[in-house]
Image (cartoon, rainbow, N blue to C red):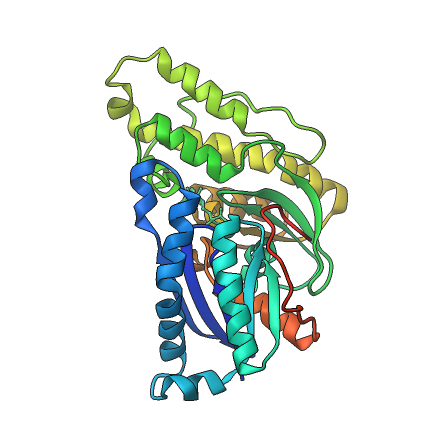
Length: 335
Ligand code: KG4
Ligand code: ZN
């Protein structure tokens, strides 16, 4: 029997089906409408989820069970999982209400899933050999966290950002460079072949294992103000490569402190920013130097998707951790 999962926490409308850890379908619709506004417009995101969710769920059912009718496909589903926190309230509500109605109509369990658990556990979708305990650095557009996972469905936050998330740093710096939103993947692309040591930026200060990124954005802003108008075009590769190196270096500094304190040998990256080719190689090299095992999800599971939500929903299903139909949504992370 399959677990159907839905993800609508931000600007991706996504549905996936998993059976005993095997992914049968993974459909993601990224809302392009926000590009022209330079960031996600919450009201538009909810409207687009509302418009597309039914078709995305149907596509995911048809991909998983191709030769069956819709009612036959639905009989294959034993529970419905959905992201209920953290995220944009209006966006979360669309997914949660759809999932509740479906579960109620089919008389099967309904399972609320924390989006950040999804990112962390997305590593299992790509690496069956990942074992507990492990430490995961989740770097996304909305969050930057170092998490210690001792056993299944465990989640202990050791450090997190006190201001911007790493993805926000990429997107805001991209905006200063004149790139469209989201700009992380563009900085990655333009950095290819660039000299990552050409421009140096200060490492922002934050307590213990926490991060800060807002100072980097400000430093880049003041630096660019002093350059002439052709600077970005003339030095794009070196500048983008240096930005990536600065962000990777900031992320590594606190991760290294955690690693040294707890001596955990299984390291994971997760979240949209973990798709960054420089960051992946940077952490891979550091892991090799420290004789640690390094895991990072395949690209398709780094950015928001429902496969990761399905993975966690199936773990919760096996432990009979079902949610009540009165479950609410929450913009802030509820662990
Ligand atoms: O995990 P995600 O899809 O959404 C949230 O949960 O926030 O992460 C989106 C973030 C955006 O900030 C985007 O710019 C960044 O991931 N991102 C990247 C890359 N691909 C996506 N950042 C750097 N390099 C990339 N290749
Ligand atoms: Zn995410």
